[in-house]
Length: 468
Image 1 (tube, helix red, strand yellow):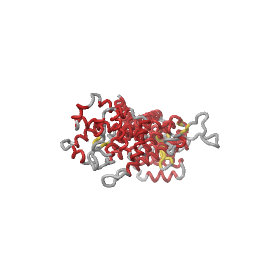
Image 2 (cartoon, one colour):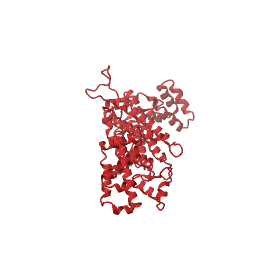
Image 3 (tube, one colour):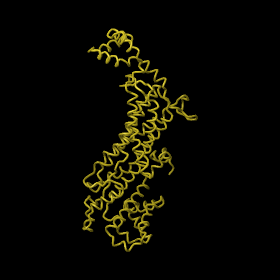
Image 4 (cartoon, helix red, strand yellow):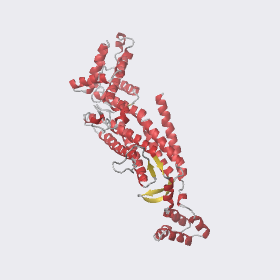
């Protein structure tokens, strides 16, 4: 299919940027992971339950069955789809495919034990959790680390770049751009810290979670122990409280963390956008680019706006999926199946948003002079400092005094201060410029970036260990 014919822009307009994610969220990827789970289960079952069959198998049978998922190409996947079209069940189509492969390999002795005692959800929950785990480790975390690194670098670069703080959208008091960015870096790092080593859940249990068929056929096996060992061997956290399906709280927690992360990043985009509108930031245009079909002068923060939209949609869909999949009728209904197939939507949008935000930051120019000029043009931003200074001097209604004098203009504030303070104290207070009224901004910035660095190192060490 031509990308221009795609219904979903992730597979159309944004395909080139996101095509690597197909190995986590495509139907082909799900098929491969289902086959991996089935083959791993088959191996453990033969080794521990039907071990008398081992003497009838060739010595390299394990290596041979491992080839089945390894060689599941698109062409092979289409064979599974053909089986599914015939029988109307996707997981049953996978199991029939595996049995056919075993017979073709001369390993038909294994065919009766493929999927034995399992339901489709025993396979699906493990496959989805493993795919999400790899996405988290291989795609999301590296992407977040790069963004975190860039924001932290900018925060350090602008540790002393004075800007006017705004509350309720109007001028408040001065701060620094570095402090502003360090706050976001810290929030982003804390969210990354919650998801970097998230343990994805898994279960085995049969029709209603009680291992009934396997216990009936093999009463001497401890199926709870068997299931726990198998789930943990796949790198997942064993969940014993399943019905036919895996309770969704675990993955919902992960998705809610993604939703929160997206909301924080969307807010960063909006803040940077507003600063651009105020002329404090400039997002450059490359030669040959067109940012308006009618106005040649326009240089728009397009990557910032695209990132914001991506984050907002990702946050909403991740949150919806997380909450909706907590609900299942009695021991099983199929409404979850179609929803889980859209795990890739918020995940891909998050990656797209991070990529566009990084591109925006690469083009961002900080207008230091304009920031400083704006601060100095608002002497009333010192009103807070003055009223607190008067209260220190024992003047109880200092707030009201400064507020009333402000109505007459800043010169009236200065005259009022002269009336209440000794000349020496007045001269010291009156000489302070708004740009110097930044409190502990630089110290807090460095403190936050120190915490960011600790989390950054922890995550990068984890990723390095995962690759080795």
